[in-house]
Image 1 (cartoon, rainbow, N blue to C red):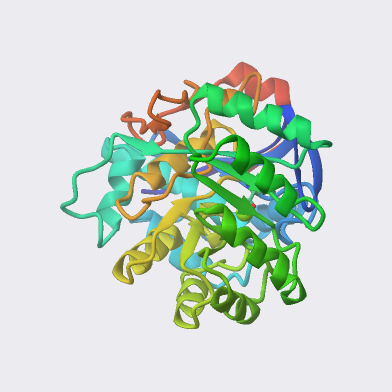
Image 2: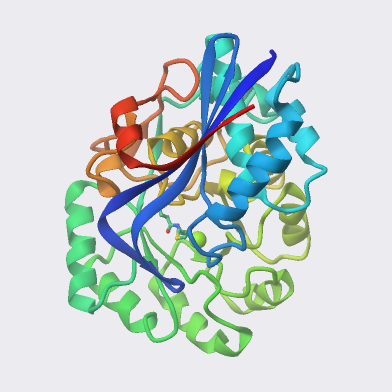
Length: 377
Ligand code: SMG
Ligand code: MG
């Protein structure tokens, strides 16, 4: 397929409820949407970089630059046989996985539409592990609950999500907001599948605090230590009963293999933006499946464009733990794409069946929230 045009949209959507992690508090979700045109079809991708370099060094502005000046010229006007071919071409680019993923993922949507299959089907065809396995029609999900100003407010948030039907809760932790908070939630909901995410807020010197979390029967402790450090994570894992799950540290299939080889984690959170696109996400899924390591799909507070991609990815067979993929209404009053994702009674989200992502960007909403746009060439 020849790609003849590409559009970048810098948009910003207000959150229903502010989201706070060990990095800070966010009231809105600024993001970039990428649209690629080919064969009379339009494919969409979402960039999960944030306004500032907190979760990762990438920002909206670095991603805009890399997309416009580096990646777009590698695909525009070219004949492409597959999205993997674009991924291969992007390998020349060092780093910038979120920018690469935004464009590569738009191509996955475009190719799936061109073949008349859903993105979930196309991803399953690309996975050595998924071939021949019956595709899931819905994926298990949970909710990630941010840090709140007080413990009472946190308990009220968790209560609301449990009442809404979320069967797994993740709590954000940081030094000073950890053992007592997890104890309070565990006492109130003794059987709730529960996990925590530190977003790299601790060091090995905090091992005793993290060991104290072992008593709460958590599914996992996500990214307790430095984002680039798998060596200390391996040392920490030896001290903990609870599985460590890496998020920020895994930015490619190679990082996944290195981490597993040294025992730095027992679970991996796959975020398609963090690892540079669906090609890499499927490779990590397959590697983990071959090694008997469970994975789950992380979230980056995406719009329905990114969420549709996450749901499709999470339909692969080794996504055995619930993903951070919540209903659209948990994030935004009005999303950018339709239809919204709803939570089913069994804490699952249904995998779209339509061609490609299976959601449509609403032009009026896009116009309303666009701060800047660019069409290439
Ligand atoms: O998309 O529901 C969601 C949020 C999931 O907690 C979530 N993501 O580190 O896993 C994580 C955080 C990163 C988001 S804040 C940058
Ligand atoms: Mg995380």
